Image (cartoon, rainbow, N blue to C red):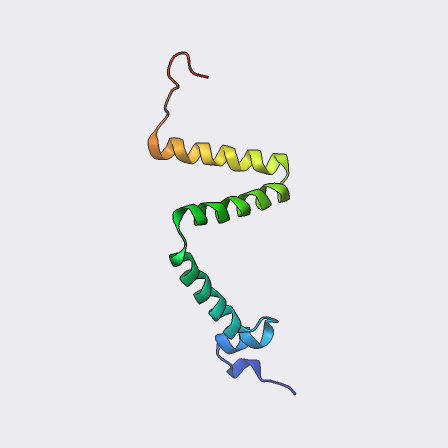
Length: 89
């Protein structure tokens, strides 16, 4: 069956060309948001730490260093350069 793509709205085109079910994607997003609202701060923190650990395994040491360098630059830009107190490492 040939579909004339020129007359399809972009949403329908994306749904046809995607291998994922758009209805299932929408339900998944809703379930994720509803579940996140029901979780405590400690549970959200635990889930976040699992994601951070998985990301760390995936990145090379050079990539992690670059991310950390950018984070420091962003903090300095936001809060200014802060020096460490005397005697603290």
